[in-house]
Figure 1: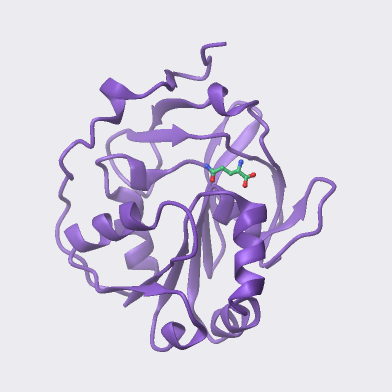
Figure 2 (figure 1 turned 90 degrees about the vertical axis):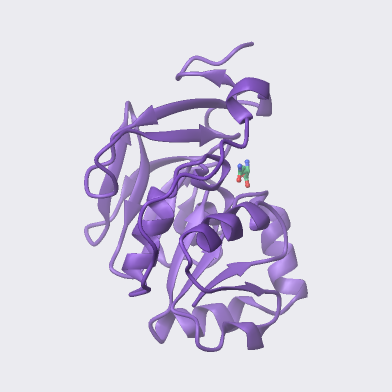
Length: 214
Ligand code: GLN
């Protein structure tokens, strides 16, 4: 069973991928919802807002305790920021992934973009990537394996018990990262399936490639 932190951000989209993969999932709004889950997804959204909600809902310590007891964590975008041990100039939050991130490092919301990349070990085909006012991972520690490096930044990485992506796999029709996380958590999952295209490519205001519209 995989939990999705359900306070703010892309919760429904992550749930849709897990449901397609037939992985049991549960919304995590209270500490008691952490019982018996093998992994927790912290979705993208806004990291300051998420950290305030985590305090209001008294979830920080229970999540850290579950993580110490073996629960894996996957942070997407804002979720990844919350896991970092260094957040340029700000206090780290969970501080469980040895890495330095810089928030909003690609510019404003309008500098968001989509691209794709081959991520060795995650899929054999290029994976679509959606960057929305993303942070950059600029450095990782010795126990962190880089899964995807792009230009001067790291876009995906993992340690033995955590996964971070600065992009949003849940906003695409490709479930490769959800399969990868399910496997990391020891969960069985259905064969690869592609979700119906949510249409973001056609209707999105985001640019394609690393250069975004000004
Ligand atoms: N800019 C956001 C932050 O700093 C992250 C954006 C996202 O999750 N797409 O928290």
